[in-house]
Amino acid sequence: MFEQFTARAREVVGRARDEARAGQGQIDTEHLLLGILADADSVGARVLRAAGVHDDDLRAAVARHTADDDGAGLAEADIAALREIGIDLSAVVARIEESFGPDALRAAAPGPRRRWGRRQQPGGLFSPRAKKVLELALREALGLRHRHIGTEHLLLGLLREAGGTAALVLTEAGVDLADLRRRVESALRTAA
Image (cartoon, rainbow, N blue to C red; front, side, top):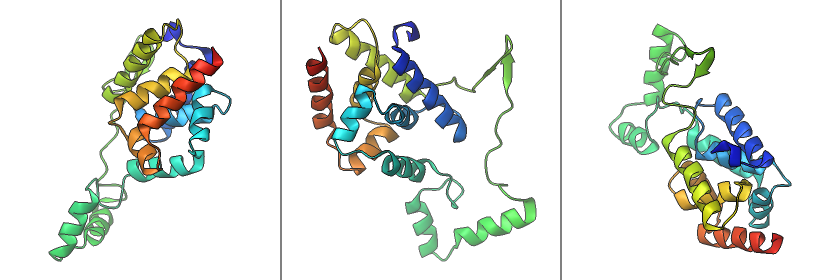
């Protein structure tokens, strides 16, 4: 499939890989979105900027949603529920780290598996949602009768998937996903 990607779309995937390495390791929807935004001259990034999406704001929202918090992986609602019954989770985490060392509650990163001299991520390079986005980008390109997959198709795939962190941070930023889709389609018609 990657042979159909434009040079810019390949760069987006490369940037998404870099973003994932800085965080959890596996490429997910938010990494693809940040990769699209990183190429300021691409159709996808231009449409996002025209819709009022700002790179720094989105990056902060992604960090907020993907950060390992002080609650050792618990959701904010769970932390609040524990607080209500008198359990200070940050104090518990501090005591555990005091006894067993910093980051004792964090899951150990699996060692690299080598096959034919290449490192492989456990579960693959792409998360299931990111794989779905790539598949949907291909379908969007085919539906538009394009022979390539560009940043605009990746963005359409992200919008169509609509269940990952990328869609969540976009809607939190006040973006209407259906309107953003219309903007991308309009930009494609204008460019043709």
